[in-house]
Amino acid sequence: MAGKLRTEPGVDNPDDFYARLIDLHEGLSSEESHKINAKVILMLANHVGDTEVLYEVLEYVREKGTG
Image (cartoon, rainbow, N blue to C red; front, side, top):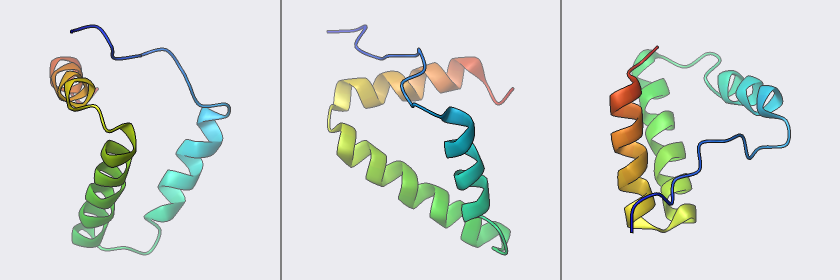
């Protein structure tokens, strides 16, 4: 069933979360930063737990690009 992906803001303080995410990478090498991003992604994917939604996320971000 497509259309489960929510794209509207769902975090109370998105700017604060973004700042903490950026701080997480402070002092890390590029390789360490990539590894920590992968860990965050996998943990959030596990928390979501809905493979269909996760696939929608992948399609959505691929279509939107990096901009």
